[in-house]
Amino acid sequence: MNRAVLGVLVSGRGSNLQAILDAIQAERLRAKIGVVISDTPGALALKRVAGFDIATTVIERKKFADRRSFEQAIAAELQLHHVELVVLAGFMRILSSEFIGHFPGRIMNIHPALLPAFPGLDAQAQAVRYGVKVSGCTVHFVDEGVDTGPIILQEAVPVLDGDDEHSLAERILHVEHKLYPRAIGLFCEGRLRTEGRRVIITEKR
Ligand code: GRF
Image (cartoon, rainbow, N blue to C red; front, side, top):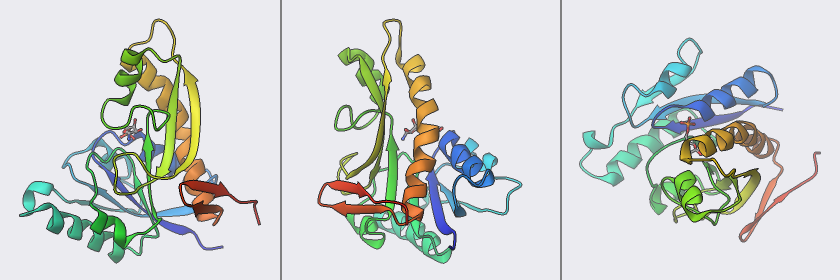
């Protein structure tokens, strides 16, 4: 079986990118990172792949007249590297439906809450403020909305009495690093079938 080619979009720290890289290195994930694209120069994420044979590119929004041409540059770079699955890993921008149309059913995101609770920014702080006893993370396909696409995997973590957004974020992040490579692996094995809002995980062939 060929390795599916991933294009990873990042903006910052890149700990999920690191987890994906580690899973590939350990042969827990049969995939290949074709390109890492950052919208932020100097992002720590870019340093994580230095020394590997992985293309990296910085594509900054401010270098383009509008969002459309910015997104077109990203799509062109992904296509250049024959990317089969676009992985958003802490990429801090909302993608237009035109961009999504280039990769139908082939863009994934990870969100640090149990969707549909607490979409958008600062999900962990939202959870602490709300007073929920359980939060977690969600891997989902990306659609036109903000964190609204069909859910692939979710895992819960407890919210403890002494938590602030930082301690909760850390507990969730630990789970993110297992869940994201697992969801990507299911895609690469052709085991995800979307029926409306539901993502069915099929048996291993
Ligand atoms: C993670 O919490 C992820 O759920 C959210 O952005 C954060 C990215 O962290 N989408 P990192 O850059 O992967 O370390």
